[in-house]
Image 1 (cartoon, rainbow, N blue to C red):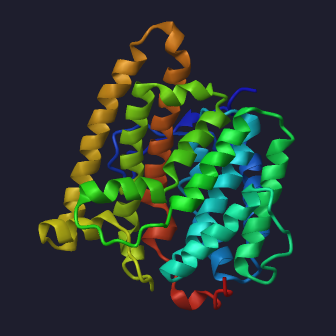
Image 2 (cartoon, rainbow, N blue to C red):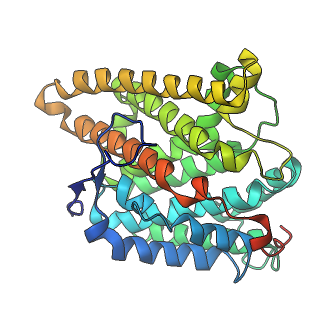
Length: 332
C-alpha cells in the first residue's frame, strides 16, 4: 500500500521554527487513521481525569498540525495507525515515569516489558497505572503477531531493549558529548528508526548500511536536542528528581546562563543539520539500486522536520499546563 497523499507546509510565518528542513504533512488524508490510533492508545492506557490522560489530550491540540501528520509522510498508509499507537504509548509512558523517583521508574519499565514476553500475566498489577499500559502493549503485540511479518519480531525486540534502557541512567551529565548518547536512548531512538523502517517496508538489512547508520545518528541528535530546546521552559518547572535537558548540561559545561545555553544549543542543532544536508546529497547521488536507502533517509529528514516544526508550535511546550489542572496521579 502507498503512503497517504502529502503536501508542503509553509513554515515562513512561524518565527520559532529555525530548522532548514522542508516540512510535509499527510494529515488531510491520514487524520482518520491517526485519530483512531490516538483514541485506542490514550483511552486504553489512561484512566478518566488522570494527569497522564490530560497531558496526552493536550499534546494533540496543536493548531499548526498533528505531530504524526507532520512526520509520517512516506510511511505506508496501512501502517500509520501502528506507528501512532507505538509512539503515543511511549509518550504516555514518559509522562508517567518522569514524575516517579528513579527506582520506581525502573520498576515500572520492567513491568511493561513483561507484555513482550510469554510470562505475561493479565491480572498481575491490577489497580496500578502501569497495568493499563502493560495490557495495551500486550494486545498490540498479539495483533502484530497475526500479521505474520518476519520483521515484526525484530521490531518488538528493539522495543524491549528500549524499555530496558530508556531510563536506566541516573547520572548527572556534565558535557553535551556525554549527554547525547543518553538523549537518543531516552528518546527511544533505535526503536523509532526500526519502527519507521517497518512502516515503510524497508528491508531490515538497511540498518547495516553505514550511510544509513550515519544519517540516523545525525537525525537522532537533531530531534533529541530540538526537543530539549523547545521543552526547556516546561521541564525546568516540573517537580522531578532528574531533569534531563541539553540546556542544563550546557549551562554546567560552559558556566553560562539559560539564554546563552539555548543560543549554543541552537547552533549545535543547525550544525548537525548542515551535516545532514551534506550526507543526504551524497546518498541521493548513489545508483538506482540504493533506492530503499534513498527513500528511508528522505523519510528521516521529513520526520525530523515535522517533529521540529511541531516542537516549535505546540501548546505543550509554549503554553504548559498548570499543575493545578491535574488530578492526583494514580500510584504506579
